[in-house]
Image (cartoon, rainbow, N blue to C red; front, top):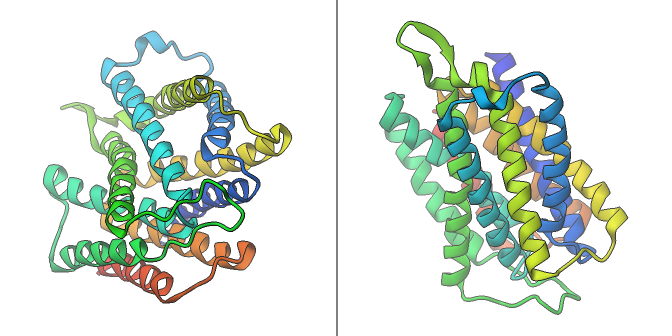
Length: 299
């Protein structure tokens, strides 16, 4: 159990590195989508090396479908994130994206019959309150001509969209770790096709992101810094997703809370320390209810 918790903390820490890379890029007018292109290129290269010698033609159609679909959904996540960062700081959207464990817990309860009791339901209620606080926590970035104050309703709906979209990816990883190859085969889809899934996922997401950049003709102002931030984000993504996959066969409520808590706390606190985001009352309420949500989910 301690090793499982350590791996879960590693997953949240990896995701936190992605958020901090986006936040640093935001202060230099580098959009998350630009960092995401580099992230996907590096991650695709990594998983190409991991799966070297494997014939992708032998990969089941379900793996292809899930990987490409999640690549497209993550493109939508980038669009949600870009819109939110234009309207406020990093902490609220990153807080919501790290509540991905809630869809995973609900899915695990419905399909895999994992326990979902009073404490888990209270965690969902706490997450809803967290969204309400986060919708009030926005403060437009100084010096950004594109920063626009949105209504709390629109801002809150964008946060919910980010939470749901990001939860789909984590739910898929959970499913791959629980679904066996056959009735008499104890191996799961993750055991055999994890590397192939992530290879197709990152390659397809990278294609969507690159297509978005080319269509919009919006290129990064500082290519060297974009590559550096993309390398940092790719390290966080590969570590985070690999650690998440390693935890997936185990009950979600056991490990997802630690991953969610570490991602939320590290990113929110470091955003204040490193980037000077002002921790007002709404920020404190957002962080408090986010942490309360993961604690309740663990009980």
